[in-house]
Image 1 (cartoon, helix red, strand yellow):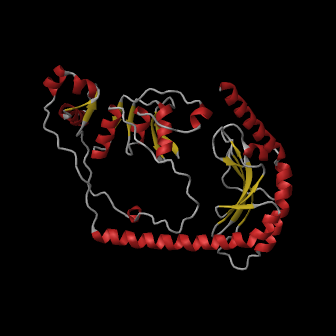
Image 2 (cartoon, helix red, strand yellow):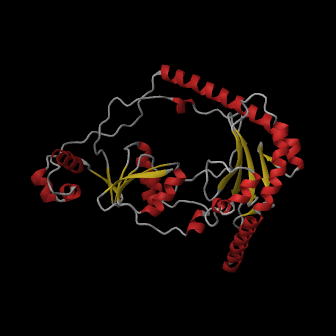
Image 3 (cartoon, rainbow, N blue to C red):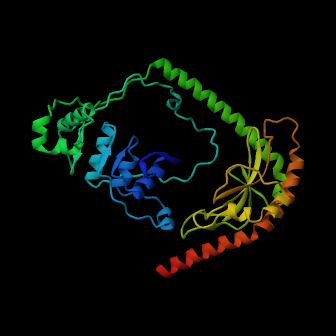
Length: 365
């Protein structure tokens, strides 16, 4: 998730391009306040004009109420039209609120259509629908204005002035009946479905083999690390530095800070993770005590942010032959105690933030 953009001479962003899951796009829609949005997913439509639940982020960030976009450009599909109609009528789409799934589920079968590899051979742009002030209008003038200005981009006249001003429209435009929007998706050739199914089966097989190899490593480390205070949760090894607690009232309970072990095909690592990413920065804490942490183990590269900081890694994973996992378990058992001592002050900061949150909530009640 991130952004790139086209900048004007003063260095201010004119266009920004966003990519991410629906939750991320809904959050962006609620705070960005753009005048014009080109939305390819429908998430901006929901976030900018409908009520959305973004969880505790609204409390943590104190998100402002942004002005809705003046213009929203969407793919003209039955789904998008239905979503616009539901928002206009005040119907909010329900969303699933199931618990987070486990890291690996051998019964899960990914939709083979995710593996389709299709190329666009032809594309046609045009205005086929115009929704304004709660009703659908004839898009002919708007499409005629778009075509006219595409050919005469040298003219200093606005698209909306040309399309919505009756005098200008009559004098300049020659509107024609617009083509109706497609009512169905194009069919995928059967041979592509078959190729996608084979690709999905191969991906599932690779994932299953990798998961079994990861579990073999966890099983090898488990006896030694469990005796040193580690635990296994959803097949993953972690070393909690606090008891399970909620970070907000009525939220799930997890350790506020913990060490996490991860093994992949070519590497193994331990990171320190903390829950208060919006208020505390564990990377800055470790960097400020680099010499002490380096005395335990050389600090590796990798992901470093307010939430996660790597403490140890090695360039061998479950695919490497002849790895002495018993020796590595003993090494981590010793180092985890040293890391606990070095992170004790940070744990106190986390507990203080939690106490302040719960005290504030009690005062509000």
